[in-house]
Image 1 (cartoon, helix red, strand yellow):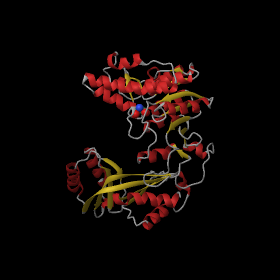
Image 2: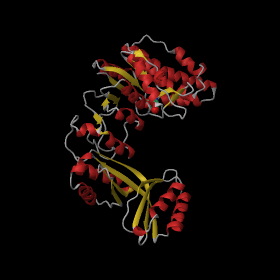
Image 3: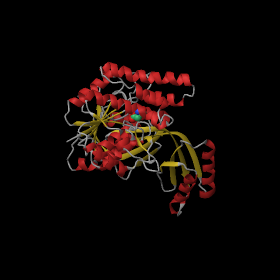
Image 4: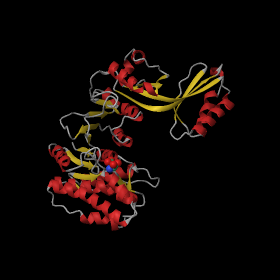
Length: 441
Ligand code: ASP
């Protein structure tokens, strides 16, 4: 059964890495549909081709524009030479200056993927299928899923083996339009769904999805298998390997995603599967309570107390109205009998809006006390395993107590697959380490 493979920017960065890509593809006869990113960074201080294209587009000085273009051309030509290919892209470079769509930001920025796919198609002897042929956005600017799926499956059915540029498609007006950054992941998922792939292999530069942030714990374990639901919880809390929109097309069709490392292809990577397939035994994983730990800093807590709050009808509704009217995002709202805590995401909320909000709550809800606490971190401990295991919350609390961390809030989702805790920002790192040591090490 055919597979869809997507190779990210580091995999496509230079001739050496592209040779690894070629070897991976040619070693697998099912590897028939390949989606690629633009060349990314060759080393940490390098610039991604997409960023070079963005800078080129924004350059108004004609001479500097030419210089930027020749730097982009040099990146591709070095790859072509390094691979020993007989391929001349000079007309394509010139098109960026004088082509019909050279005035379009999306068109210019999409050319990194376009040229990257041209090169890989030539190297493999695969057909080049332009993303403009198979991906369509609607008039509202969002992906037109149904139209895209019918275009993509019709077109790819007649291509035995194809390389497709990631990151873009065509707008309702027929112009090239890109996804948000990292969007080649979405293109890969679209292709996987269109061909009814057995698996969507997403090749990157890490061995898989890590149990927690490697900046907080040295060499954390790689998650061998996680469900789409667990991924959603962890990704929401900032753990990211995939573009968030890449999940929907494949999740709905029950296609698993396998995160793999181009630079360590023997590593099995991380499998992302549907919960139902795990439940039914189609996929099996080792027994564990916790699948992953992720967190984010800098939330704001509004702690409210009012006598007899529990018997006051509409109290919480008024609180939510106050937030809603100011476009403030509520993350959590744990309640006691006479207390409620609002944990909010302060992104875009200025100090004066926050002050106004507090004043409004005072006027409309008449609390006995209201306190604002900035600098809270939220940490999510995620795993279906905790549904059937007693004592998880006690272990969370115990391990944080032993690490001398004060828990400011604790909340267990009704799905019973996550426990969210709030701690002070300065306790964030040691909390992650304590939870990792308790559940994973
Ligand atoms: N090249 C684009 C970016 O850097 C898209 C992608 O790589 O997925 O965001």
